[in-house]
Length: 350
Image 1 (cartoon, helix red, strand yellow):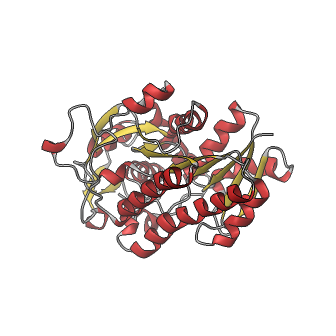
Image 2: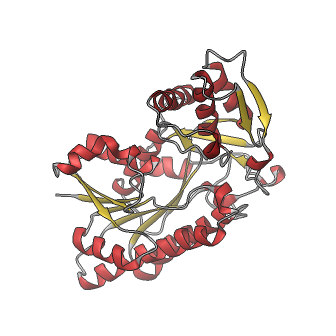
Image 3: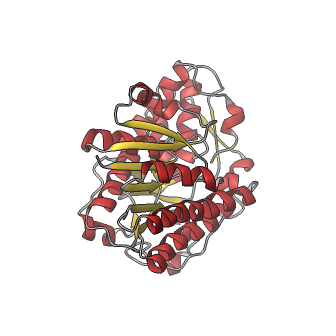
């Protein structure tokens, strides 16, 4: 039986990737999570896990090398999707050391555990996906942005400790492929969102605040950060389809790809789209919260994904409007079920 290992399975992307693989393959799914990881994103998988029905959870932490070694040695996965990270750019300004340790050294620990397993069992040849980020490109001046969008060979100019950590993640993936002959590939996914998106990200905190206002739990005021930043959006469900194609469509060790959607707009337009979906659209007010502004913002995130599309044939399929509708509906369900915390967590995101 083919086995896939997903680090960070309890996150938005990891949980959607699990859903995709369960529906579209016959693989067994092994999810790595910390003992204290919130399980709400994978709650719908727990019954299958309890019945050992193709879903298995393993406790480990990318900051604990021994736990990773144990998991790799036990599972010997055919495919590894490394999604675990401290993934919040704004938070990284206040926790830079944790961010660098988790994302750079955590990736090194996982790759070392895999390399050691390969050394012990030379016939073992896992296909490994290392998830970097479009944030590695950072703040690109308009005059330096290629006409077709940011391509893989654009220079790195990271604009946050998170982005710096993802530069390290990206380079580690390529290094292990080149130095040790491992089948490791790296992706730089641009903005991707949808149901289960954390409220520290701008479009999700907008949707959460709208849902809370609709329920009468907060005043009809949406706190925002930089609304002029330009983003190209993909749906998380298209993103995980891309990740599946990455590892199954003639994987090339050491390759690195930009992946992203096709809908580009300013963050303010994203906010306006979400507001337009609300019955409170004529009552909602917008206020800038200085705490949501980054010291530096990667504000020109438009990708050129032609390399990945040419190699795999992948195309995004879910329109931006549907993604926003599904994100807002998800927050409405959480608010109605009492699962959405109030503004103290909102203040972390932009």
